[in-house]
Image (cartoon, rainbow, N blue to C red):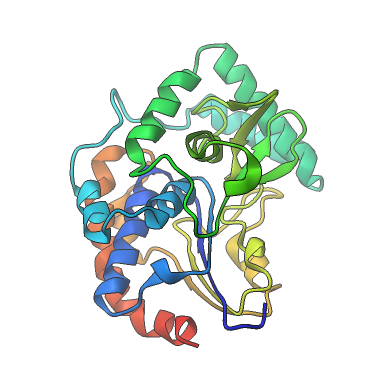
Length: 284
């Protein structure tokens, strides 16, 4: 855009990724770096939840405090089972050079898992997302949420003007294949925007200054990783990913709500270490 514009890109990373990202944003605010002033916010999967929260009127300290409190999730923690991981691996082998075919294959796996009753129902997921959001209305400030058409593998973005309610958009972006059900929007079904890229950093193209919070940085198979896309941006970019302490707090299952509080605290602590680097980019 060439006008000093800023973009905040929030990547996927499960329930712990939501907590870590909120912690980082809160910690950067402690240091005088307010990422909520971003002209554009892009959210993928966990990042779609955080993006919607940051664009809401809720005070940042309230968002952070929520991560330290009880989870909206009930029952045992979700996780990718061995069968799901095996199917992911086979899809990568078969479609490692065809990104859209890979995405469509994962979409088909998601549809099959839901049909077999291996995931919660759409109603349960929408209720969980509704409980997680501080507002179910689209913000007036630009927010882009990513998803993938489960049938075709086509990448989709949702905004305030898309005619899709915010809960559906976020639920679709968070629909991890094989773990959560595809989300029906109109006559289409959608899965996690992270199936295309862990953060979809390229959507910030044209913005002068970009900050990326990425709980996960590496893609798998044909999925683009953060560095793959950052290198193509002419912008000034700061990428923040979990440090050693944050990785320890997050643990091995990013979908485990029991690790939320530790992940949020680790993100806030890490922010103090990266604040100068982020400020240099954000302030221009």
